[in-house]
Image (tube, rainbow, N blue to C red; front, side, top):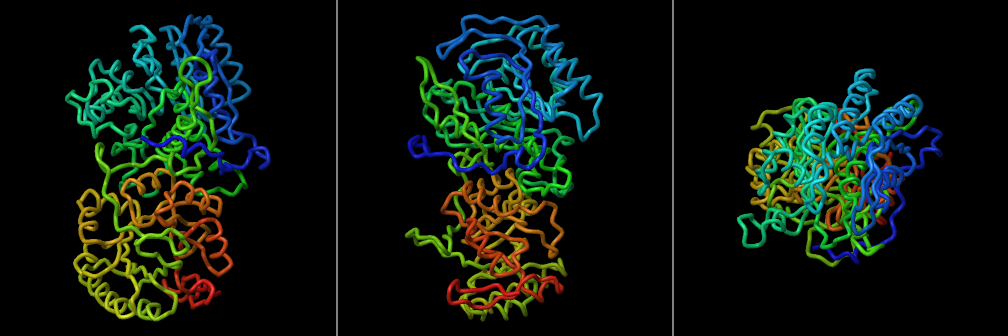
Length: 591
């Protein structure tokens, strides 16, 4: 379990600028849910999440389905207003404050579920694909403690009328079991359960696994303790159609693609102060999803890479980090369990989830490295402050003798012939060895292993997925090679963290003409945030548009440990910088 005291620190400034200071209307997010008079769950938690997570980029509206008399010790009474009143709430909101996304929570009766389902059908049928509200349904049926909250008629109406209009449903483990009519005792059973719930009509399903399987069955039960002990993990499965949204390369999978099935894992906190976790998670997903659309749709506004690439898997990663931070800071307010604390946009690596390769194990780390600027006392290999990327043996020879260059990455843009690639790797490795320079190979991991004596492999997200599927990551690790991976979005960062690489790169920081990039420029603020979300023992490499020493310095000041650059004159004449030695920084980038 994590030490809670280590995380009780002031929140860092949020990544998002306030929407009003940008002169733009915020995105509208609805919560259609019940009211918690104790303030810890329901629409009270939803509205807090909408406003604090978005830092003003989203505006929350509420349509109340039921009123509860409750405090931190429990619920004493529930009152459901007439269905006609819910209908009126939705009608007046829709006519003035049209939603970008919608969170649906507790629908305690058959009539309420039928009404909301009919409204969702209408509103989705009247809008285009680009303006259709994104719908997150939290099927509140079973409380965190396992108590049943709705009857079978209401459950059936929710599945029949609401699920087909949901982009994602977010049942907790008990609710998934209620929907399926059986227990889920292993990760494999959770995965199969998700497939069956997906067949009920939603575009995706997120089964929340914060409830430990071991808790229910006891240490002497049949459940493998490694399946749940020490961490909380959720399983997301998306339909093939839904998973295409925002995918950079349509016909090549990534480890973070929801159609593959994605486990998202956090360290688990030993605390009872978790009131409102389900409400907060679902509303945070709706909010993060709306932030992504808000970034993409801004006319004339600068679109920030990771934010403008926010789709469902990314939104789930952000929401999970947000809830995890809130659990870490939870305290008792009344006489019962305390609520999740609403903090702000995720800014600590301790809270950000990983997407692991295995549903029950943690992958061994690749060869560890430390940053050039790190003061940590460690025996890890020091990554240079500059990483030139070239595509010819001639450029390797030139840079291997340049003072200050410790690492060179070789890529292959003009050939896919394995024998040619292998020959170039061997020649380049010989040159690097003579000059005590480390050679990294881009993409062609099999050839790098066969050539021998290469230092490391760098893969993009699609190549990392195919490598993992072929058992290549274990072969790279067994060969003792370092491993670097590219990231552009929050879900790609979670996938990178899941394989425990030697370094993580982020790009493009600035616009570049050296490569056809599917993502908007990240900017320095994203560099700062990536540095906060990546553990300090993993170096951060920045790439894209780094054309002179001043830009390189601004990137280092933002938190990047290394700048990956394309030397001027390489890359078919599109290289962006010259490289020479510098007494101050061991290198310089010259225009």
